Structure formats: C-alpha cells, structure tokens
Image 1 (cartoon, one colour):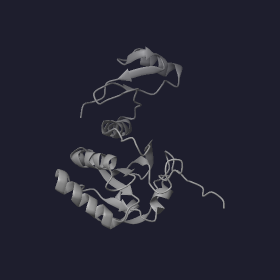
Image 2 (cartoon, one colour; image 1 turned 90 degrees about the vertical axis):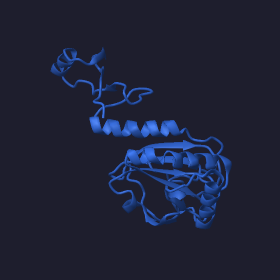
Image 3 (tube, one colour; image 1 turned 45 degrees about the horizontal axis):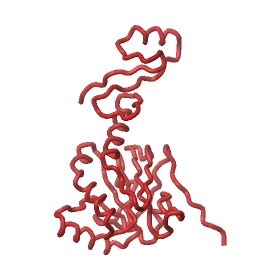
Image 4 (cartoon, helix red, strand yellow; image 1 turned 30 degrees about the vertical axis):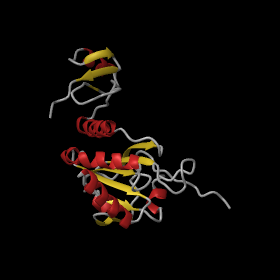
Length: 217
C-alpha cells in the first residue's frame, strides 16, 4: 500500500476552503474569514493539559485579537460533543470560556488539507499548527510545534502586529522587532535613490540598510 501524500499549504497560498461543524455552529471557512485577519490553530486533543493552557491563553487574549480585527479558529480531531464538554469543563474549573469556534475534525479532513497530521509525530492527532491568514484569504505566516511543546502566545501576538504593520506602512521589520521600534525601508534601486537616501533623516547603517520611525497609531 502506498503512503498517502501529505500536503501542506505554503506561505502565499490561498487558505484551503472547507465546511465544518464548530462549537459556534456550522462554518464555511472562506465566508467566515472574509475581509478579516484570521488565526487558525490546531491542538492534539481535548481534555489534555498542554492544550488546555493554550486554548485558555487564546481565550484570555480574545480582547487583543478583537482589537486587531483578527478572528480565532481552533481545531482538533475530536467530536463536537467532546469539544462542548471540554469547553464546559474548563469554564467550570477556571472561569475561562472559549468563545471562538473550535472545529470538530473527527474525519481529519481539515487536518489533512492543512498538513496538520504529521506521521512522524502522530497519525491520529494534529500537531500544534498556527496559520496567519490575511483579509484576502492568503496564508502569510505558518508556525508548527510538536505535540509536547506549547506555543508562545507573545510571539503569536508580536507576529500578527508585525504582519499588519508591514502591510500598512509598506516596510520590512528587523530581527526581534516590536511595536515602537524602527522599520527597514526598501533598498535603493538607482544611484539617484541612493544619494537621496544619504541625505534623508533615516538611520543609515549602510546604503542598503536604512531604518525609519513609524507613525504611532
């Protein structure tokens, strides 16, 4: 029997569309995320300790994602009944409510479409994948974590702000960039642009590496 080919969407691809049942009702993904930033993230299983900390982290930061016009969509290879029971359990024990939709992917169709099933880790549980999707439905950033290591929520938030900032101001962002720091402007393409840059108020590391302050929102 031939091994099944595993497909993984790439940065720049349109996010694969699907229909699925979620904890907030039936969803057609392309319609739900239309004209909005979206973070689609998978977790291995309901009622597991690391996943509970992660899902609680997303829920506690719901206000941040709302402020940045970003929808959250979770997923695991569990039934809708397991999802609802888990949501209820966490709410009763910690007071944290998962208000964002969680996809019930019991047939693993969405997980396979997004490359979340990786046999070297598990053939029955999705790895901890994170897909950043822009308002045009295009995948802009992908993170993958193994089953036994939780995600870094601060990096997820930083990456989202970085993507939105780079798009808004048409700039690139350097190593470890955080809001308030300078951005990198595109290198000059002509000699006249090079001379103009040298006379600008940019922070000039070299003629091809120049930084500028961004307007504070």
